[in-house]
Length: 81
Image (tube, one colour):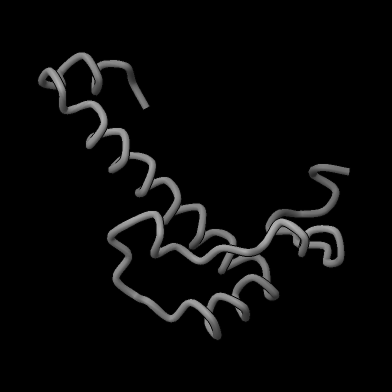
């Protein structure tokens, strides 16, 4: 993402633009996790069936405590270990 996007913004529109950029990135990240992590995909399909995501609140989420008990990996393991 280039800084030119922000330089072209109208005054006072930054918050809305940042929210849109953040939401798009989160949707992309969510799709990556669903594709590459079976557990996340299963949980997402069961508990978060909303297809039309318009807000960050619509995105699937997992409680932080789940990471203490389940190894969730969306990349090749050797990449980080």
